[in-house]
Image 1: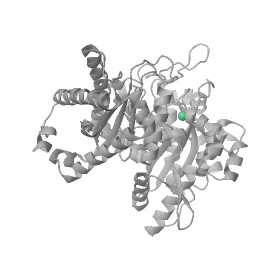
Image 2: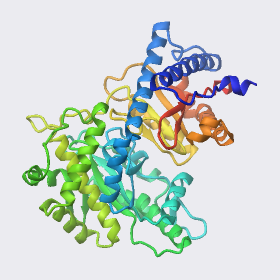
Image 3: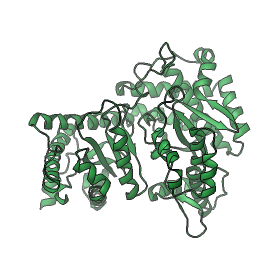
Image 4: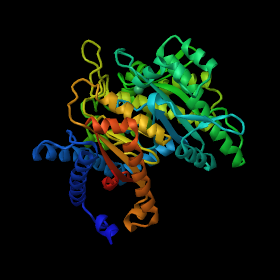
Length: 499
Ligand SMILES: [Zn+2]
């Protein structure tokens, strides 16, 4: 039976080394077939590497991302990290916590740890639709709606940070997704004329992006959460979360409301002595916070520092409380505790990574600039390869096939404009995630995951935008199936038979 020979069942007790060797062999076969398929359909181009050495480099580079993904996720599934999660679960009042952010790889997910789930969408704005029955704005992504519905049915309340992104020190950077929206506000199809007018009147691009986030993402998620709460027989909440700014220069959160800012970076610097008295060494991870080998040490220390701050009488926590009470008195008690935890936790991050500025005050760390040759991951329904990467890795969770096509196109164009990028095609991991048990049994559920993955790859390949990128040797597509729970890579399926 071809199905069985083409997709061998992985041995149950595979060591990390055996697994890496198995995936290397899958990648090698896949990349050979991919180059052949593209050459046959599109004519000869550079997608087929020029020499066996070039081909080997391509395999090796792909395996670097896969091996790092698996190393990081093995760490994040360890007993040691489970104890960190348990601690953080208590710290945040057992609220379900989530965040949205732009696809920029300088807004990394690993900083937040696994207790905050995150989705990444261009300029941090989810795609929304109007519900036909009452014209209410709701999220377009069925995956996101399912997640919100589960949260509404849970005993725990939901709290979210809706991040817009900026660089407070080096203003030549900023958010390119936001830049694109503001340059073509007329073309934005999910906000009406009055909303566009209000956005265009905001004093700065960041304020415009905050208003956009409040009017689209924040409104849609709050509406849908309340719709589902009503269906579950629960009372409405005033808000699901807070739109805030993520600063990629100082690595901090700024909450801006009614003309007042609360910045976790400023707050940390203001109360350095206080934190030092209570907790360990400032800047302990200045050199190592982007090194995956120190990830667990770092996250453990973040949780411990946060615990110390939350459990002692100190001005830093009092200032956070005061700001939230003044500007967000409509949060529920649990949501307030979760917001406080998120902000105090970010102060702990800032304390442990240190000031990160050189003598002239310029930011000086590996997330200041986007790095050339970052890979891209796209996942339509589920987890993505490299979500917790400690190095820069573009990834996004598009809400539809249409969005998947445009996000692949957008991210590729951003990646390939980064100074110093090579002429090599960019690796685009097209991800689907599967249940581990389904995968080990190769049952129908797993078969459906493979089907969905193949459909997504098909749609990308036949689209004008992605087809052009393939034809012009800008990308190579790598289908990837990862585990829903551990996010370890399960296999590299080969769909090139349909190219
Ligand atoms: Zn951005």
